[in-house]
Image 1 (cartoon, rainbow, N blue to C red):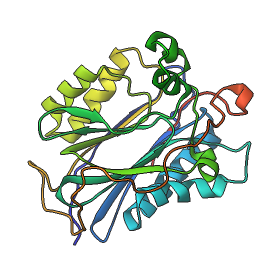
Image 2: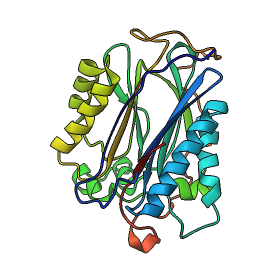
Image 3: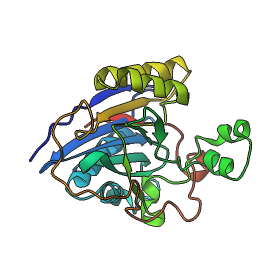
Length: 272
């Protein structure tokens, strides 16, 4: 049984970018809905094409299998090209009773609005800045290194994929251009979550208002089993609120986005 899933989508090219190299895709297969956001590293036609293909492949495989396998499939065509395009990715698929399966590599993000009105960031960015925070480095210093990726699609064959399950009434998948204070993010989701398209547009506008110069792509996806949504998905469910789905994130740092790592700095987009 195929259940309609309402999705709000908004994307915006960074003011100083020659093109938007973020990409997003969504796919439904035999009642299972999946979506992906890819933030390509750079701002060239090659990177934009890579992001488009990676997002489309990830969403299709995630709907048929799992988001972890979707990320692996998206990375596979580029695994042997060390100088080829890469980028960050986040993928999610719907499960029954308010559950989502989520997988990511890099700094694309998944947020969830819970039934108590709170918002949780489900993904931890695979960046040098986040690594420094976890080691106790002051946030002001760590922030300067948030653009340096420790993991991305190009490194999936070496460092694996982080996958898990989570519960949320409303899921937000976004590229790292969505830089909005947590309190405002929570307010916008609570205010506009019943209208996903309006919510996505408001989130992109808020990112620009707070000075984001990167490409921004946002998907707002209400869970079909939760309040103010439609019919349930015909899938299995589990009792645990969060459960590992695949290997943990990178066991050791991979190269970042900087030029000395052989990868140009930037972000990316295209619609699948």
